[in-house]
Image (cartoon, rainbow, N blue to C red; front, side):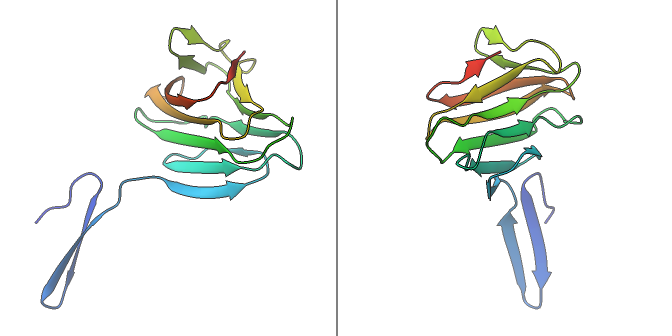
Length: 133
C-alpha cells in the first residue's frame, strides 16, 4: 500500500491503519496573527479589532477559514501584503498592503484559497457579507 495525498498508512504488528490527514485544524483566537495553511479560526473580537494577515508565502490550493464568533462593533479584518489581492466573485481588493476584507457581524464566515502562489487569493465560500477595500 502507498499513501496518497491526504492519506496516511501506519503498519503495526498484524495490522494496517489507514487514516485521512485532510481537513482543517481549528483554533479559537482573540489576537492578531498570520493565517496558516490548512487552518480554520474561530475569532473572538470582544476585546478589540482583530487583524489576520495572509501569509507572504502560499502555494496554490492553500486554504484558510475564518469564522466570527463574537458580536459587537469590533472588526475582524483579513489583510494582505505587497503584491497580494483577494478576489470575491467579480470584485477584488485593492492590490497590495492597502487591500483587505473585513466584517463586524457575528456568524460571518469566509474560506480563502490561494490560486496564484504567494499573491493571488480567491474567496471560495462566504457566509453573510464582508466589506471589500
